[in-house]
Length: 201
Image (cartoon, rainbow, N blue to C red; front, side, top):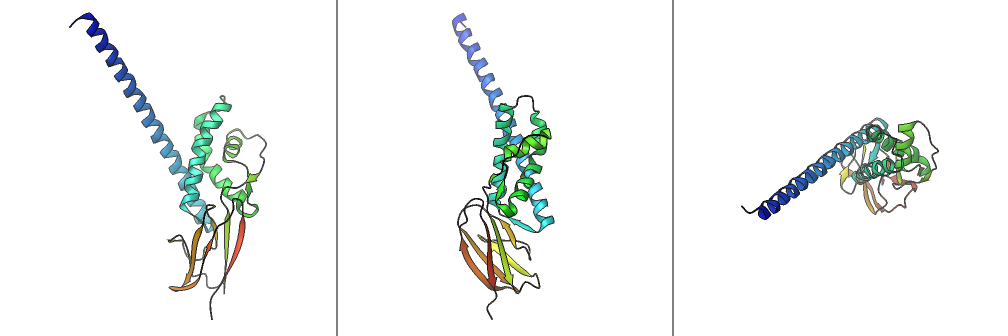
């Protein structure tokens, strides 16, 4: 093989190896992001179960996505802060986001919560939550055997507080298999709405 061809072949081989290494790094990054998102999802589910709060899938996904974006933003602006440390506090930050905004509709941004949890310091300025709160008052309130469905997803019986995305939602409430009420709702970010739902006599 002529030397010129050998050079071309070697260059092509190096380029291919470099490209494969780049793909491998990207795949590892995707795997890591998926793991972090799963940990955030698990933390939200555990908190929701303990506190009897319904959290829709789009809210869980939204907070998981925010955690990944926050990781990149924080590590760029605060190079001295360990990314591993930030990854470790991401699930707690997601839960804190939901807890703080449940009644007021306001919470610090996800990135600010993560940075404070990771460092133990920093000012937290409240902002409007991306995810509104819907509270449903079922009458009569007892027994707590009513079941709320949002966009077709049934939540465990007796749950009356829900975190939803700021899009139109179809809500039904049933008791003992019979429809109690149904309605559509679209809440603005940060909104907190209490919706009455009375059984028809």
